Length: 179
View 1 (spheres, helix red, strand yellow):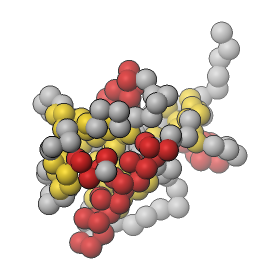
View 2 (tube, helix red, strand yellow; view 1 turned 45 degrees about the vertical axis):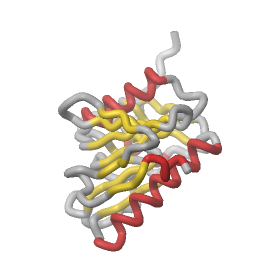
View 3 (spheres, one colour; view 1 turned 60 degrees about the vertical axis):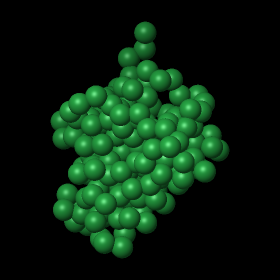
View 4 (cartoon, one colour; view 1 turned 30 degrees about the vertical axis):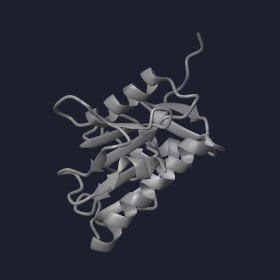
């Protein structure tokens, strides 16, 4: 077994990397690019969130290539497929990784994703304080909503996704996300 040297968030930020990477507990992990359909769905989520967030100055909506430092005490930078951070938690944008975990994070499954890995990522987001995690499955046209407390809720084509107390007033038909 070959031991790999763990890196800090600052070392990760300065590394001359090509492609998509995340940092998980000091270990650099290369990611596969999104497939066309999952990338498009992630873009749809960003657009729908931004339509609600931007006019009222509620915060910031981020696309898939944005890194978030999830923990103060663990070298971890993750990049959800879509994310929202309230303005009161992030008054101004930085030129570094976003220094807080998002309030809402969405992961869109790609054909190469393993469900166990996706659920581990959901658990990590919740552990980091993310208040709403969306696991979007393009194959079944469902969105599973995870929150820190309570069981997950699965939404289908006939349902409406709302922002609840995380993003009050946000609402979009699930069918529109997959349209």
